[in-house]
Image 1 (spheres, rainbow, N blue to C red):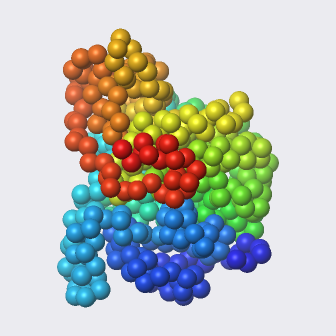
Image 2 (cartoon, rainbow, N blue to C red; image 1 turned 90 degrees about the vertical axis):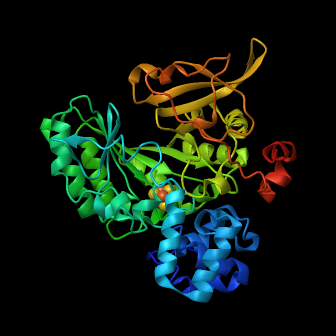
Length: 466
Ligand code: SF4
């Protein structure tokens, strides 16, 4: 490992990863998995991730290795075997493309109604690159921000990266966004998202942000940017040639009277152990912007409550605000990554118990499901029945927010549509107009817990495998 973090961004993909010195440290099976599975799950990493975040003495179980390197268990064995044959033996590009497309379509590329229910329409035409799910927040996907400094194997935005153009959201400029916002005074927040918008240089980013500062959009109070750069390339805020310009842009937003809110995606405490990552946080909050920390709970990557507690505690010390622990979404290779909701709640509760009140701004574990963001508040016994206590933190219908509701306890359920109402009811209160389609549970119980879970939390790891 080099002593200083690299200053020049150097990405690696399936085509170039062999040039990384770490490639030699991987055994044949791991290398093969990268070559095969990366046809389905987009693969991209960079020198900083390889040099600073992955502990190569601990591969393949190292959490960041699992986060960025495709692994063979991310596909069912028969799919892996067939794809392996197509890629390594037959080398038939057309057959590979066809087979890969089938796998991707099985992986629920756009969960939670993103394509069907969240895209706003004007004169019956969809507005490309916009989503409007919750009354007060519009999501905007600038086309130049639809890639990332590295790709997460669990990513729920993966169609953005893999050439599924008909599945992609992106907008080339802000005219439609601004016109839409002008006629929607109820919108207070614009979330600029991707991919990672901070892959753009500052000048391009400013072209998307500055129109939002116009007096006619005074109702926009919060400009949010969702970014993983804080972890995958903190140099973006520290040593990139336009890093200072980026900070000046944040300051201009703050000076305009709006809140510049950076939604920082973190997956593991190691990401914030790096000196440069800590410096990035300080520089962001030094502009008057706010930095919130959020990320999903993912099997094989961050099942250890101590990692979450360390992440939130370090973040708070540096001036960031813990915001969300999400439940891994029902997309991509989720049978590999999903944890039962019961286990997710245990991990959240244990991490929450380890931190001071200042870190307890965090909410979760929360499912970004079709009807809204649903948090698991706890497991209780009511009237002799074991139940999950749940509530909406955010909802398509604002009246649903913070109304407690209950589902039968189910140790295997991993998503909202696996749950059924408690107390003999047929529907949850939010299903009065339209019942939610329910799914049969396919939890991959065959997956053993990671060594970290085995060594640090034997009792919980056992229940995880149940
Ligand atoms: S940084 Fe976010 S958008 Fe990019 S690959 Fe990871 S999860 Fe997906």
